[in-house]
Length: 301
Image (cartoon, rainbow, N blue to C red; front, side):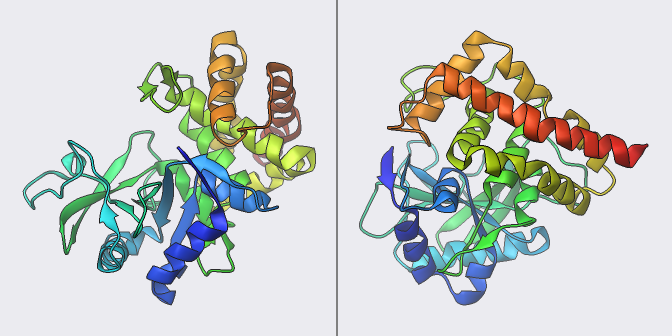
């Protein structure tokens, strides 16, 4: 992983895209978090996740964005299996994703994703949407609950929108209703890590970086977003949003893994220990999740 300055990354991306294309991309993930909390904060990461919105135009716009970047000398990320385009006959879920290094550096790459289809109930499984580019055939990956980041994404000074910490936290928790055993590649963390712990730990990182006033703003914003994005499911989602998060907090091993990923990523250099991690996790439970559940119950009553 490399230390990136969000403003520099956003500026380089914006220089390549057209004004219309900038309107249709939202930066999510660790770079979005670093940008949101300002103060020239950088972040250790290797990838910049970019979601193409809205879903109805994601395939067409995704192709246009991919071609624009490729035409601007952004190059495919080398990879023994996924570093080459597919052919048209390859199924969408077996094609490489669009992962491109900017001109002149291999320190980071952009990954293009698609906004999920909100006409269906959100799924925990990934969806893949095939696209054809000037260099061959790829897919855009989509994660169901990331639809939430469209609700209040902030337009940066470069014209590219950036997801807010609140919506990224909610999406991460909904995507992990339990701590599952699936592991991620442990190279960047030095040991095997459950993906659930990485993503649920990110919620605590966002709480620590934003501090208590930020977390106290989450519940009403979550409730507004759930009603706007998933009107028929809002109450049910609100009531179970914290299930996986609370399960993670009940396990010493899971907390240790989550904290480790935080200290390698968003919280690098801050020296956050177990006590601080658990204290802010409880802030999330007490000041955000319980209030969200209360809002949902009051509406149902």
